[in-house]
Image (tube, rainbow, N blue to C red; front, side, top):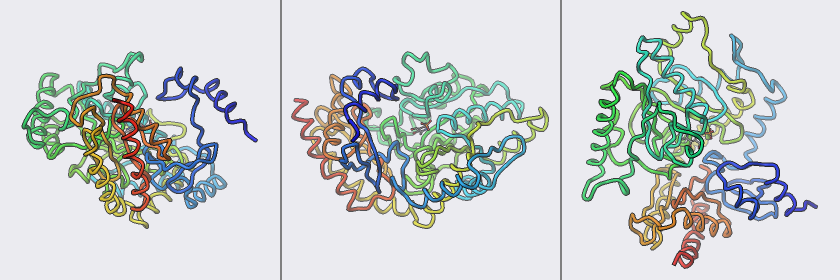
Length: 453
Ligand code: PLP
């Protein structure tokens, strides 16, 4: 029999955990997850949990999909590794790229592969720079993103990220990025300002920033259609409609970071479709393989692709690529994942079941510990507050962590982002399972409310 307490101590003796307080973990131990089934995972004592974050926003098809396991096994046996460098290719990379092009909005012309969302966004920056050099605009290099936007943790993508804890003591962000105001109406709007007025103000602030920096120096603006890891912040009405013309006016690329929102999460194939705009390029990952294998992709439009390709002709090569970008096993899983999304109409399913999901969140907005409920498709959050207003807790982050812990004890894994509780369950969740997920939430809020007072 496994000695559980021993394996928990061994863990912190050998692993440095992402997004964790190592000193607290040493004291409290880690939670070991051993297996998965449908929308649930089981810990090492056999206790089941509804995984209301789909892992890290990625396991859209749950935790034991037999078809994905079969696709990986078949490819592993046939060609476990090959690359697409230096004029070589393989069927799985090609077939998946064709599928991505067919599904993505904006007539995307070419697909580049990486292994993670961070690498996809790092690649986006390099593409924007290379493209602007290729088209004779070498000054156009600066990047715009938003506070609370999350774009990854490599040096460049962490610089795009607008969250202090991703910068602190890492000497980041690099000064290539300017962060704009978070498009969070509830928290950032002035008294009496409508969502449309707030969106118009954000577009004005964007234009003022561009003019102050000099439009000839700005390459790209990156945005998630719905901010995910920054707290599930749904854009205010008219936001992208107001922002897009400003970017077009100053010849600035719009990069859609669809690492979470891609492939059905918002009820359309892509989040940018839910919010009615067409980006110049798209970063995708997570749901591309339903989390079963590491893979990310960047899709770019024809104008960018042809300028880049012509430049490789001039300088002799495109000096970029990752050993595992387009890994055959990941691509085979990706192909099967997209086939399942299409066959089972997963975006349509999300659209239907998300009504139930939204109703639960909206109901919980009346709880005295909840300031705001937010949702888009099957992404949602409850922002906690001491009195249901926009007021923050005197001691931030503790209440969010407390409610998340109370929920875990009641068999639901969600994520505390500061004092917001995020929910992003597998996209296959049924209405009955949505009810089960939310059943213990009120109880967990009550327990934390008593503790907070
Ligand atoms: N972009 C977005 C929108 C994300 O949510 C994430 C991860 O959560 C990333 C980029 C980074 O992806 P990865 O953790 O695979 O590097």
